[in-house]
Length: 132
Image 1 (cartoon, rainbow, N blue to C red):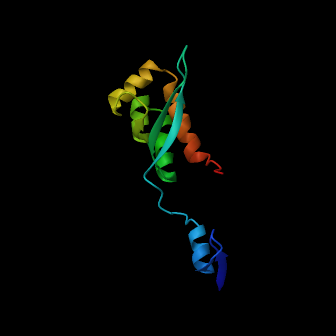
Image 2 (cartoon, rainbow, N blue to C red):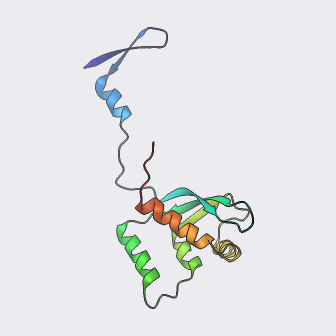
Image 3 (cartoon, rainbow, N blue to C red):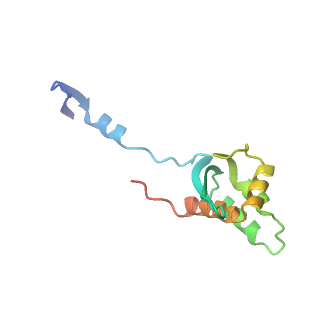
């Protein structure tokens, strides 16, 4: 089947209907990207909230269950830095390069940062956004 389209100059363009439809549809990938970026707001006491971009590591359903189980285990001795290091691959918008030490400094200086980071990850992974 052929569709006749006109260029902006009024000249006919020929294209295959199948090719047009194929280009218009984005294929769903069964294998997700290994990381994804999320803008996270960190509350700053007495000042303007900090905004940074976090590159999180993708975890599948089984890995997520293991991760959350490790946080709620009775013998849990994991620190926020240790747990968040399992989730974060990097960041931008911060005056220090990402490392466990820099993450520990962030969490120490901004006590609500750990909750903001965990919540951003949880929301992004478990409550898929509707994109317009």
